Amino acid sequence: MAKDHVVIIGNGPAANEAAIALRERAPELRVTIVGREHVRQYKPHFLPALIAGKITEHDLFVRPIESYSQAGIKLRLGQEVVDVDFDTRRVILAHKEVLRFDGLIIATGGKPRIPEPFLVFQDVMMTLKTLADARVWIEKLARVDSVLIVGGDLTSVAFAKALVSMGKTVKLMVDEHGFWPLHLGDETRQEVAQRLASSGMELVACRKLKGLARVSADEIRVETDCGRYTVGAVGAFFGLVPDVKFLARSGLYIERGIIVDESLMTHYDGVYAAGDCAQVYHPALRDYWVSIGYRNAENLGRIAALNLIGGKVCAETPPESIFHVEGVKVPTSWWAEI
Ligand SMILES: Cc1cc2nc3c(=O)[nH]c(=O)nc-3n(C[C@H](O)[C@H](O)[C@H](O)COP(=O)(O)OP(=O)(O)OC[C@H]3O[C@@H](n4cnc5c(N)ncnc54)[C@H](O)[C@@H]3O)c2cc1C
Image (cartoon, rainbow, N blue to C red; front, side, top):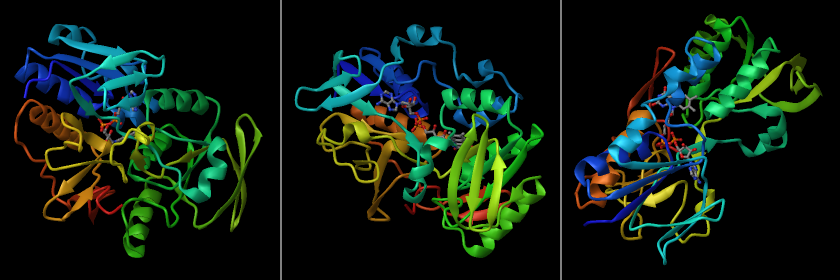
């Protein structure tokens, strides 16, 4: 099925892999990537190393900016999609420009999740999802020596280690939300926690965060069920949730992510979703799964592109896979059990 103009929303691995596959397999198509951030594609898993000063921003980027024009891909950076009209097949940008599409791939990824009980502390807590977030952390860490990490998801492990390597004091509050969306049993959680402690982090045994108050620009008073202390910064690491709020009134079926079939197509013809924002039908599970990960996103991006141009490829990610958290085997995929 030929589609003259394919718009791809997002600029992460799913989006970029989709764009490359489209240009390689269907060079007659016009392909446009629309990305909210002002920078070209980078590797989010390198952000902790950037913060620790082990690499430069240059090392984060996946490919040179010229490669987009060379490949015939139109790259629109710093432009946010705020709505999609599926009847007229138009994407609406924040600055009111409208882009017509024949085919659409939505690859908007995830955004940091803050569980309900922690929303009240949102303004005081920092997250780490984007390069912009990393730059804020770098500035902050130039001024503070101690960090409390609340939640303790999988990305926080690398981040906490980076902080320790910088000589920072790291407190880790791994409560019942710790390592979400993994459901670690008490024993495994304790084992993971012990290993983290042996890497130089201080584990906070408390289970309830009662208060966070900013005392000064670089001082936060923390109140828990077992005492009070002061830190320079508090990081919230509770995993990622699909970044799809802007589509809430578009008519797309959205549950945890954008509902798609095994070919990654939504119920609109020629409209696909891939990567962390997609909730994919799995025939063996007879259910929909959201799965997170860099390679997984690349793979889904490529599959969506191939199917958009008439392929018949199924997204066959196993419902369960083994993750290694600090040497402990965790038999689940990050998001399969949400
Ligand atoms: C700190 C950190 C460490 C990680 N470590 C690992 C790891 O070790 N291993 C691993 O497999 N995975 C890791 N991940 C997860 C991995 O990076 C993601 O699973 C992967 O990037 C998802 O790719 P994606 O293309 O689906 O979405 P994303 O990479 O999230 O990209 C989505 C893109 O869409 C853009 N966007 C969103 N909404 C809009 C909009 N409305 N308009 C325009 N653009 C929009 C965003 O700005 C972004 O460019 C890590 C993530 C982080 C943040």
